[in-house]
Amino acid sequence: MFKFEELKVYQKSLDIIDEIYDLTEKFPKNEAFILTAQLLRAVNSIALNIAEGANSTDKVFNNHLRISGDSLKECIVCLTIARRVII
Image (cartoon, rainbow, N blue to C red):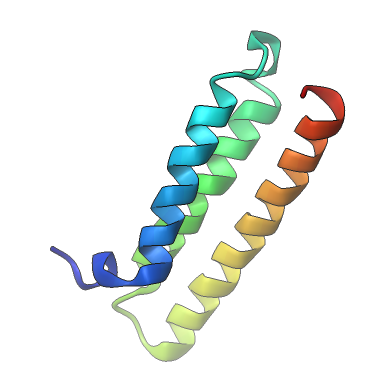
């Protein structure tokens, strides 16, 4: 097990990934290359950046956490669009 896998923020990001994958399965197929793809890239980026920065200096790790936060905001926008247009 890698050290980052013990981080609660990493574990929570995996929970969010599971929920988003379940949700996007219900999106119309015509959204597969548009909103679905963008949302899946963004949600995966959250966990990937946490893992990538975890064994670095505090400054580098904090930057990766900031990027993860930006990806989370991107997910929020995608979900808002989905709610307004799809759901």
